[in-house]
Length: 237
Image (cartoon, rainbow, N blue to C red):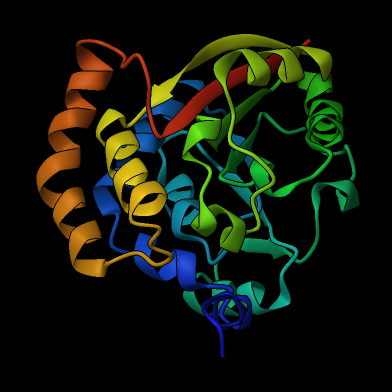
């Protein structure tokens, strides 16, 4: 079986590696936590690695997870039986009750018509002028074979993401790069060496030894001029 087919048969291969990225997920939650309200919907929750953190966040009283892949939903239910999960997409959710937030982590790049998807988020958030907390891969020059394996249509530039959010009706509150060191690592491993898998030992080392230091510097001292990903927070107008 070819590497691509192996990945297609194993929809959790991305999540298997990211299971080691505990500090990384906590760092991302710190980016979103000042903007989270009581009622939070997560789109494309996968197997619930980030959903679990949202459910434990102080002030969050209700979490709804959406995931269209039946195999991922089965794994989610085993891992997080107490969290409400809907097998479907945002288009299947009614606008009532109102939601304070939609959280979307590494999902938008999988959707061909991403502005239409953003408009769907705006429709669900507009009644309460809720916020979208968005995390996407950055920089088209990093697009690689592993992006194709993940099913990505694109990686984003800040100005392109800003324009798409504005076109969907959002007011931008925050937009910046995330994970400067990850940019260099991704370029080397997946663009230059053309690797198509994550090395678990490398992920664990980066998460335990490197990311906590770089994340502190990025969040407390100076946002990086470039990064592996983009963080955006936008309010429904």
